[in-house]
Image 1 (cartoon, helix red, strand yellow):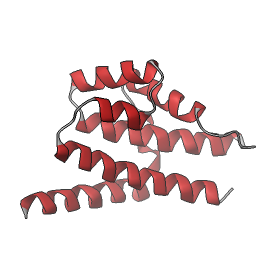
Image 2 (cartoon, helix red, strand yellow):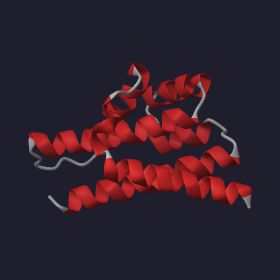
Image 3 (cartoon, one colour):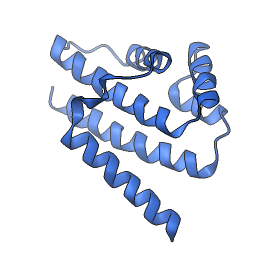
Image 4 (cartoon, one colour):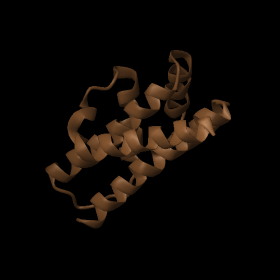
Length: 124
């Protein structure tokens, strides 16, 4: 029961942060900023304005920031190494052998940011 309440609280906090203060995610640790580059380079090419590209980068930075809050420093370093070797964010997270609780939290956070990205792209 406590685990369910904790997850629900986390999801509500993430959603509130995403929708109330979407521009807050611009201050990432330097090492995790590279994840956004990999994530954005793997997207299909769209004819986007500079503002739209900034919005996509902000969403990627927000996801990176939330993931970095969940992982410890060692896991963050391993994640960056895996991404630099060519793994996607999801593949790299699978290889980290995270606890089931961390995996579920990251999955919930990823789903929130996927929905935000889809709503942004559908508006183009």
